[in-house]
Length: 118
Image (cartoon, rainbow, N blue to C red):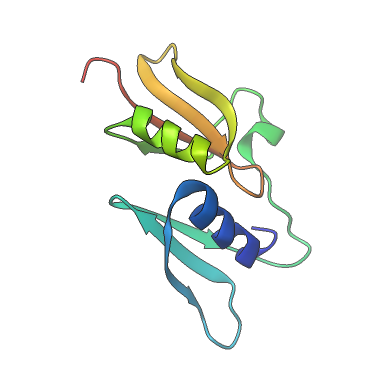
């Protein structure tokens, strides 16, 4: 993450996560956010090491995280109301999955999908 506090705020405001932890107290470089049984670690490395989302290195590597969702429709509606930035709105993809893709504050793509025939 380029700016840990901005990233944490983004996950809380745009995706409805809650902050579980950040630290260590003397040099905060790590945070953990969660919701609905999903946990995500957010971490800065060094000031000169910038975020590098997968799609910036390989066009075929669209996602930085795949997150299984029982109800992507409800999440999509919630994220839309929260002002999330979508890469792909609700749709089926060739893998037989139903869901959507959003970007976080650093351009990482999170895919929220479920199997088509559930």
